[in-house]
Image (cartoon, rainbow, N blue to C red; front, top):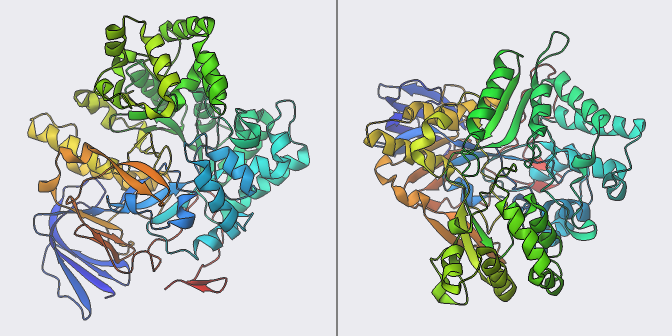
Length: 598
């Protein structure tokens, strides 16, 4: 059926306006009528009775790393089943557009905690492109589930132009011709509708493979190169996404300054990873928000922090967790992790342990992790008596220092000891300022990455549950209308994407949920099989999402995907509508390179 009529739903249009009991008619993938009065259904029309349900724009996940998964499992089911209809790729300077297969793999797998043995065969088999237009051509051969938008990654461009060896050499900088080639690639990407460029300053993020423990290519770029690329983005009115130095945080100011609109230049849409209420530093959230507000109000910037919206609960197998990169002894152990015997010799060294304890005690140094083994709990281990205990609990039983206990267990069990900690957003009672912060945009789920560490695929539903509970308790965090706006239209508008809004003439990307089923189960963690090769950590909450409609086609209905899902293309490549330069983009049809997607 090409037409859908949604009746009697409580409709949230995404603008933040009051919801209404309305009917919505969808014809040929487009919303043609929204009315509080009855709508006569046309011929060949599926009718969805949404009485008692909430009808809203499909959610937007603005920070994912699905770049590899979309090539072999393009439905991206874990997001779609939770009401996400648009995902954004290419973040953190990483995209799979220009660089060769092994370079893409080495840049991605350690940073994003994605199994190299899974990604390398995927890229080796699938990647035949080396330009933005060719990448989009390939996307249009796939039965994609949600809509896709993408940044192009600075590390991707830099390694393709300079070669990976020079791109990772701190003593090498690109020639004038090479910088011109980088800006040409960026221009070509923006002309195809890429959202903008993603950059990287963070020393945590390290290479895998041949250049083990080197920083990502973008981190070695100097001012001349960065300025040339940012000038292109500014000229187009496109978007700059960045990762600052998460250790000293000074790098955040560089992005804020780039965003500022002074007398001689235009302001630049800029977003930065990521803001939350850290256990390790309770002052960082309000401080960064205040500084952002100063840049936006006084220096005429268009700057947003990506607001992480739920508890930042992470799982770790032994020392396989990126937060160990933020202090020297943790970084050293991670560097040696490819040779377990060598690493264990290090972990057993008394002098190393002395320095590790000193690093853990350094409370005044900038940090993300609270470095508290009393707040780190064992979830699974060969010794089942450890389960449920913190490392401090176990240390007390053993009459040991907690660091010695932790390192002993890592030496003994390596990745077989699974533990968890919550790094930030630990108290929902403190969410009101965070959820209402105008200097942030809801996002940073990291979907598709850290598959054994994090599970935030359904974060929009979790946000709505926190808001729902606050209403039930009589102290609302914000209205449901505003929450849905922040999860949909606000994101779409900030990233220049034509979605996130229920209005006549708009694409029909719609999520329908049952608020009565919206319970605390949305916060539960589960393990599912990923690509038939390994496990993936997810939040899973059956029964809440009743329908997901993408471009006017029913993708998900009553806890099941449609028969056509995975066989036909549902999503489109969403071309960003840049502010200053409008590209003449190719009209991409349904037949590309001889492969037909109905």
